Image 1 (spheres, rainbow, N blue to C red):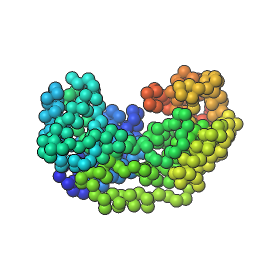
Image 2 (tube, one colour):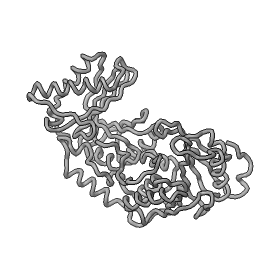
Image 3 (cartoon, one colour):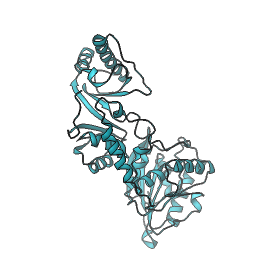
Length: 393
């Protein structure tokens, strides 16, 4: 692989969660990426090496940022093996580096992604052995180089994974509760809420604090990649430009707003969760930005005339509630009585129980929490009598 010139543009594929593609596209536009195109759980664009580094640091809703190196059609095993061997792999990584293949296969003559990954690995290893007499090692857990293979209808895209470990693993979360929310999903939900990063933001069932921390990082303009403990994938590439990355990192650090920009408040009834949230908040250095207290949501009241409330109540999937319908009815009653003037967003995977909220939704956004089909439900909690009338779901 020829050394990439700093200013030279190349294709980039950024993966995300279903339902967050438009949010991610907007983030890539903010980084001045070109030719942005929204796909299914992915956005393609074009950018240079600096923008690739920036995307890994700044994109809140990206999971992996991939650099395609070869596209081809593979009708059978022989095709796949031969096409993979057409790349000069010794240009891409060294014999003493470990590698791993992540393969995703759909609607193709090959049925198993593991088989495709194995065949791709064999083609790479055989090439090394033929050239050098030795073979590089595979490390599935922490490889130096991650190679991504995507096959759809026998069309293959081979990419280098510039992220390494998934970008949702920010690094600030030491303590989690039973059902922690993926950081990328939390950031995406806040973006979908349209919160302006200045008005009051409340999570009244905050668990280990993921919504609060992601909201605070947005308000303070903190790049989520700055918390990472492990190196990014691109730091092991042959064309890694350490000086350039140092500049990107220092620029990101300098963009942080030091004084609190918004009132960000979290409550939880469980003291263990409050302790976990406090640990994570301190770990992210946000203890001066986020207020947190042990409280029963049903006894809380809005601390401002308007703002955004986001919550992820139990679904009866991983966290069990004694009477889920009553819980959701109480949520609706509390929102209606104590949070007038707020936009409330309830993220739930229990669509039956959500009917018990008893308020009219103004938006219903389909999302997934892992395999669970969920909705982000928006309730505009008007002041006074404008609320009378439709109270049904």
